[in-house]
Image 1: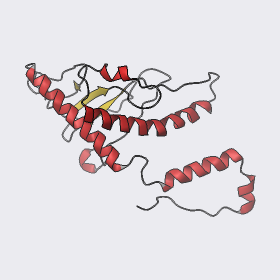
Image 2 (image 1 turned 30 degrees about the vertical axis):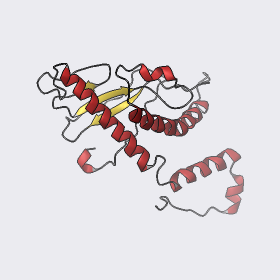
Image 3 (image 1 turned 180 degrees about the vertical axis):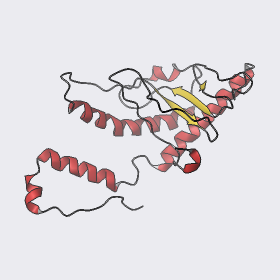
Image 4 (image 1 turned 90 degrees about the horizontal axis):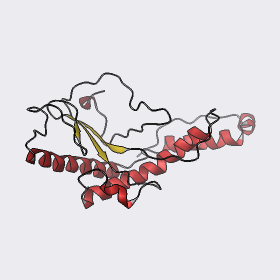
Length: 199
């Protein structure tokens, strides 16, 4: 691995004129640029495997109910555990309980219908805990520096899940996710983004 980014020389006089906050921000930016990845590949692979495994488990359960799990015969479908978004079974939304950080509880693991198996639960917990360590401080920093008169004291996770778009899924029009103010959606690709997977 090698660092991405560029180094610049700053005249000493300018360096000393920076505020302490600017210096800290610069150090944080340099740390982020020097890191090849905030989420390591084995963690992403494990979470991706858990998502694929869960989708396979749920597809089998859906098939056992007499419904086409690919949405070809019956069209797109919606169950608590998985939503098929297009004919052909190429795009799915799969909610899972949030298992990371301070807002997760043991009770949440059973709130999404069919429970996760132990391997899925462990992989998703590891992903969520890693995301919590990255995203929560960023959100707190963004909200604390906002010009809003409202003070934000707590960041909570409202929902978590996997969006599975397989090659060949129908194109989506540009859209925003989440109609509610005060919510921020965070998307993390678990696979390398290549031209084959689409823009």
